[in-house]
Length: 369
Image 1 (cartoon, rainbow, N blue to C red):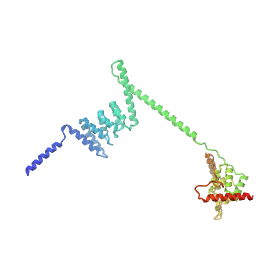
Image 2: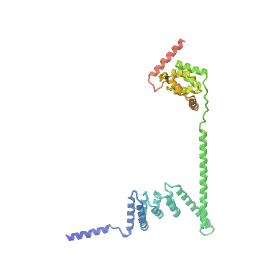
Image 3: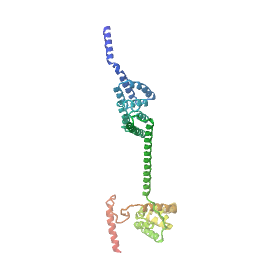
Image 4: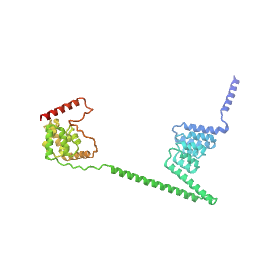
């Protein structure tokens, strides 16, 4: 029994030795384990970010290129990352940092700008392939490219004249010139943008309709007598046309006023035209019989007339006239009260029959006359 136990212990120790990584790959495994553990944190705290940054820096420096490339690819998909770690990975050689600079969404703009200004043009090219570049990063890329182009041109010119490196003053002057050119271009674009906005505002103001001046005049004796006659005989169609002529409006406005069965619009119109009070009573009670009902010693028509202020009614009717005159409708107007109105598909089949009977009765009356 003791022998079996000893044999089992020795065999298990050998298996554990086989499972151990080689000494040269130990730091690579630890680096990937650290990265995997950090990826598992959905919402890392500040302490977790600080601890990961302290562990990652020495492991990343001492690991192999393959392990660092895998770590950079894994961390490029991480939504939260310490700035020190992002700067360390982005500052590595381009074969390692390319995928991280192109895909990572956790790099701050300040870190990208620092990498552009301190690393090789290949790092700038990788950053330029990002889809969410801010204006500051774009300006830094343009500045870097212009600086490199100016320096290369100056280097070729100086090399052709005499074999010496460009001085610091020349590089500074080139950078200043590039910044001045970029600033002037931005000023020109801003000026052009303001001119386009001003032109669009001017066109919009010119396209706005000019309000039509309206001045409502009191009704005359003859138009008032016609309104009373047509209202007394119950000829609503002729009354609407006469009212439109008195208002100097289209027939559509007179029809809309008459079709208001409450009588409020007609009462306001008669008050604005300064129609006689007795004529207003007769017109309202003839066209709308329910206004003749008595309520507390008075009629509904008298209540409407008393509540219609001539000044307020005049302003209201003038607003109707402005809207009527500024309308650009060109369709043929078919009055709702016309006897020869076309068949309305929204009505039942009884309407055409009634229309035919009305036409026959009209012919008989004309024949009798």
